[in-house]
Amino acid sequence: MTNYSIQTISENYKMTAFGVLLEDYNDWAGNAAKTAAKKAEITENGKLAELLALADGQEYQINYVIDGKAWRGFGVMGEFDAEDTIVLDFLAGDYIVVPGTGADKDRLADEITGKVFGGMMQEITDYKYVGPGNSTFVKAADNGEFYGEMWLRAKKTGR
Image 1 (cartoon, rainbow, N blue to C red):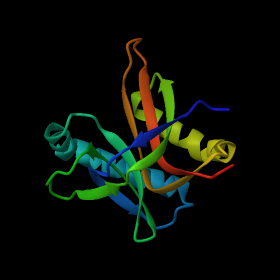
Image 2: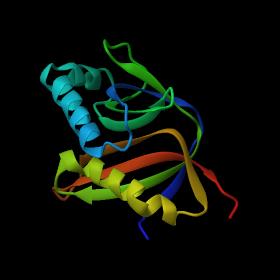
Image 3: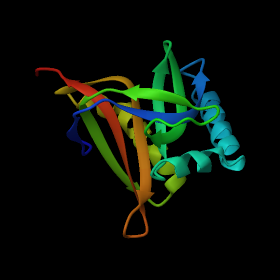
Image 4: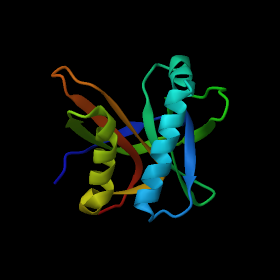
């Protein structure tokens, strides 16, 4: 079983992000292309760097449900007024925290996400993911690799 922990967040919080709505949740290739195009756009035009400068500099990859549709983006912890961003609400409660390490910073968030939704959530029987979103961060580790965590709001199932 994959390593995870349960962390409790005592207060609601917000994240500010750029992103894209995904029309067909099962169009993995199309969604990856849309997400990559958005990341390239906000990196090249400097908007992501501007948003990171408003916050603590830590970037998050965020998955969220907006009006019943999947949304994916990149942002920061906190509420900021930046052009073309949206502010997402994350609720207090228990969170499943899944760590990961790897040599490729740009791929690690996707690797953790794939591990979580590629079968790990079925292995966790004492908690159930309830959303409405999740976030993943990646940062440099001391050993030259990268460390990341995915946070998913969950409720205890009573099992």
